[in-house]
Image 1: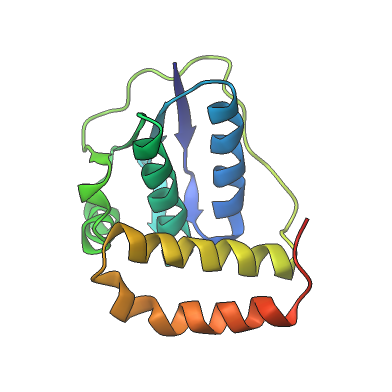
Image 2: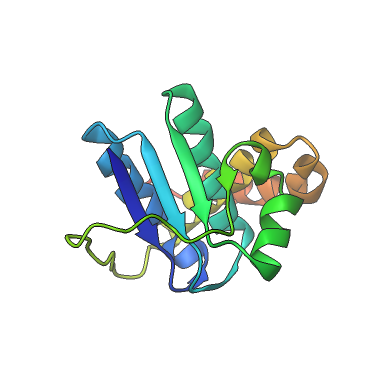
Amino acid sequence: MSAFFRVVGRGSFQNAGLLKEAAGEVWGKGCRRLVVDLADCRTMDSTFLGILAGLALRSRKEQGEVILTRVAGRNRELVEKMGLDRIMTVEEAPAPAAPENGRELVAGAPTKEETTQTMLEAHKNLIEADPANEQRFQDVVEFLSESAKRRPPVG
């Protein structure tokens, strides 16, 4: 079974947690193949890239796969720079036909605590995905870790 996600606009810290939550939901139903269509994605920030990395790392542990499709231009550069092309399939080809029963993922704005946790997890994922990212994001991880300690835990 496959799950299809289409990113429209920016892939950012504002919607990264929503993607993670939706992917977790389909994993809970036995889906082990995630296809993420980036044809309509203008750009991605490091938090969104880190959530993609986390999905790929989880899928590898659970004998699944993450496929990024219709990845071109700046998005392809970002994916390759972060080393994500080594832990997931990255294609420029069109995505397989998405099912008609897809749903749009819409949520309210995340709280500051949720955003901090998502960003921290995402940047740790990027470092796990490619150790070369540690130098890029070490200060970010330290800052977010300190920030998370000052706030009560989410959930």
